[in-house]
Amino acid sequence: MNFPDAFIWGAAAASYQIEGAAHADGKGLSVWDMMCREPGRIWSGDTGDTACDHYHRYEEDARIMGELGLRAYRLSISWPRVLPEGIGKVNPKGLAFYDRLIDALLENNVAPWVTLFHWDYPYTLYCQGGWLNRDSANWFAEYARVVVDKLSDRVSHWMTQNEPQCYIGHGHHSGEHAPGLKLGFADILRAAHHSLLAHGKAVQVIRAHAKSRPHIGAAPVGIVHIPYRNTPAHIEVARRSMFSITAKNCWNNSWFADPMVFGRYPDDGLELFQQEMPEIRDGDMETISQPLDFYGANIYSGQLVRAKGDGTTETPPAPVGPPLTTMEWKVRPEALYWGPRFLHERYKLPLVVTENGMSNTDWVHVDGKVHDPQRIDFLTRYLREYHRAIADGVEGKGYFLWSLLDNFEWAHGYKRRFGIVHVDYGTGKRTLKDSAYWYKDVIAARGSNLFEER
Ligand code: IFM
Image (cartoon, rainbow, N blue to C red; front, side):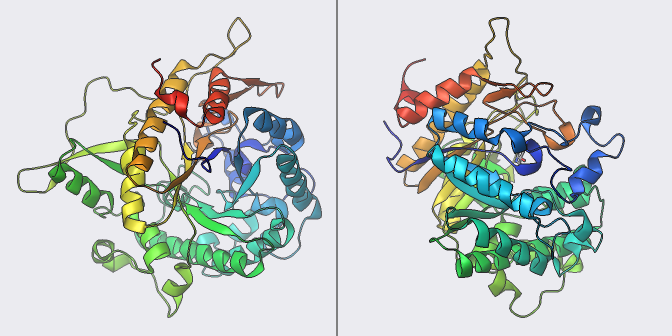
């Protein structure tokens, strides 16, 4: 059993989480630079100031990717590195970094998949209202144009934004992520609407100005609902509940994805949120729903649901002592079957798993290696399920392991390690973990070794 020949085996990371060089070469401040300065916000007072120093070590990192045989690397661009004030004057040194990085990837036969926004929002624009300001959509389009003009001769895969559910939800509602706001729900919906407009405008910019044929998607996140048993009744309630909106928060799949794909907000959300709905101007939904080439799905875990006798949904009681990652996320391999399947059925777009992986307590062992058997087991189980989804008809085009390197895990600082490459944050030394060698073999075998007895 193999994955398809053209399947994209990749790994992912994001600018603020790995680059460091937070104040180098004319970079402007992001909301994360500011949040990390606030005492008590980030575990142990960690910051992204140096992170993995990828800004200076990108050549080594690109070589590692080449050695692993990665076909693609999902990176994000730091908006304030390119435009220190978010709009206006371009920072040539910032743009030159991405230019060099793209070249280094291509020299190692790794295709760059670029995400325009993975949460490091320019602080100057935040001071002008950030996502609450409707102009944010135009600011984002201006930024997209600068990046596309510079990189699209060599980049053909684009994602507009990563996980709006998080940067709006955690960033503006619960306040645990930058910019650390705890706004009312009407403001949340306004910010979300502007972020959707920004997505649509960026797609327009990429289509209009890309120098090579673009493939465009976005990378939202959401909770995958897993049927308790493989019966039509349980499957149906899982499918329905995965896309239904039942609470005033951002943790759903459809509030963000339905507008992007169908050009309308889902009815149940409209009903639940009617008191808080933002202004929607003529043409907004058309702007938001630009044609997309793929649906990027970030999937780590899932939630079991089952049908009650009356056809409604309930969450079965949690088992005692479930397998957990160090993020305390439940290990649910079937999420990589049901997530792709339900998302593909609903949105009918080719699907790419744009993030999947696990955090662990990895360190360099006395033999100088990093042994991470849990991660290998986790990935084996998840990839088998993804393969099953593809065998059952899901157009699964690729898989990006989160993450290439251990990195800055937002409010958790460096406490959580997601990489297949260990990073010593004191020296910057990279050590390939057992999972990196394992992934190299999986890629070379096109996944066939995932099914061998272990
Ligand atoms: O590290 C994050 C990433 O930035 C967004 N998706 C989830 C990952 C793990 O928490």
